[in-house]
Length: 120
Image (cartoon, rainbow, N blue to C red; front, top):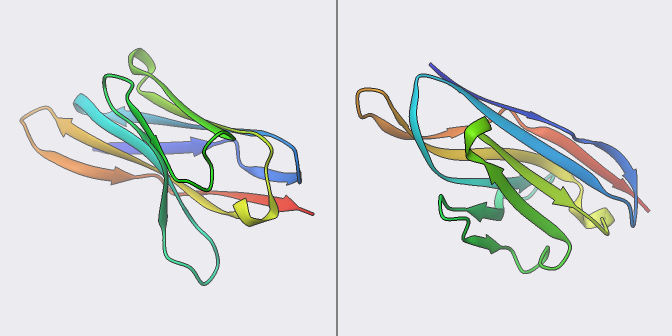
């Protein structure tokens, strides 16, 4: 069994900061790319950022320069530092990881989501 558990969401004023964390646990052999997605009410889920095992990163244009993704492989954890938050960043944020389990099975896994609300 594999789990991704997110934390760090909440309510913040525009211009403020939040840091999201996502820790993976279970029968994990290795974790490949990890990322964050978000889904606002009435909209499709969209990629926010992802990071490879070599720490190569990719960001949505809307968050470039404001958000930073990082990972600590020894802790099986990925972070999303969000600065200069805007009301349009309000969404449920989901962690995603490409995981290979002991035995070789490889699948994408999702966290349960954490709400981020930015007030104007």
